Structures are given as C-alpha cells and as structure tokens.
Length: 210
Figure 1: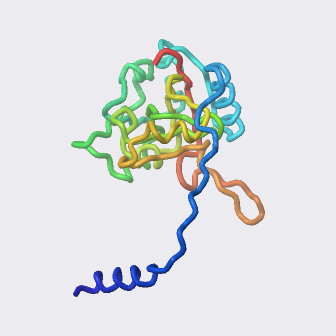
Figure 2: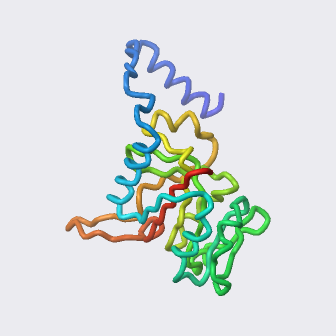
C-alpha cells in the first residue's frame, strides 16, 4: 500500500460515521431584471466608483477612442486575436507589440510597454467586474497585469447584472482575470496605493454593436 492510499484510507475511516450534510438552499437571484440601458448605467456607476475611465460608444468609434486613450503611450501590446482595426488610429510613433503563442513577450518586455489593449469575456454590472478568460482577443493573463495602463473593450452584449448569470458563460478550465477597477490596495493607515497587483490606469470602452 502506498502512502497516498494509506492517507486516503484513514480519511475515509474517520469520516465513516460523519453526519449527513444538509442540502444548502440556493435561492439567490439567477436572472437579470434590468434593461440594456440600466445594465450599462449600473456598470458605469460601479466602474467610475472604482476610479476607472469609462466611455460608452459605438463600434465604429473604437479606433478613435483607443487612440485618444493612448495619446501618451510610446508602445502598446495586444493579443494575437484582437481586431487590429481597433489600433488603426494610433499615432505612427506608437510601437505595436504583438503577443502570440509563438511569439510570447517576456516580463521585462511587458514591463517596458506603456499599455495593453484587450477585449473581454463578460462583465458583471452589479459588482463592476470585468472578466477576461484567455480568449485570443484577450490574451494570456500577464499582458493585462504587467503594463501600467489597460484599455479594455467591453461589448454591450456581454454585460450581465448578476454573478450567477456570468458563471455559466465562462469556460472554467481557462485561466481567468477578474478586474474591478485599477489595481489598488490600502495599508493599515488607509493610504491608497495603486498599481500593486496590476495596471494603475484602467480605461473601459463599453461598445454598442459588437
């Protein structure tokens, strides 16, 4: 008998006379009651409260707004599945750095990059949380965590009101990044420090028509 088998055997023996666990009631809300306009309003309210920049725009306006958000950038990283038309209005001086499975940027390279542009999988309006799940238009987790500025595209069609609505839409085997505003923390004296666990600046473009 292996050590693993022995340990598991002891656990089973210890739990043999354990009482039956009562079923947990799951009566929480699982469906949204808000209209599209109300969902957007709620998400914007939460994101602004988190000190994120937010704009609600049409799909045709994405390149213009991305360029405006990255006026001060010298370089930008983007995942291999991102619609490159979204970067079309960037100034020619801004270096575009592709991050792809066959051409992965190193952490020092990402750290030296001004900003990152990604799409998103789903957003929860009630908590103001944007979820990235590693799809090609979102990329691997590192590219949205290391650069100091994140411009995130949120299609209106991916906004839900409640977390229980979001979970069934996610592929749980993929690495996920849950974003609720720019990275920030506070010490014991409540001094806010930004950029500890991710970007200091988060700009969200909520887009109709994607």
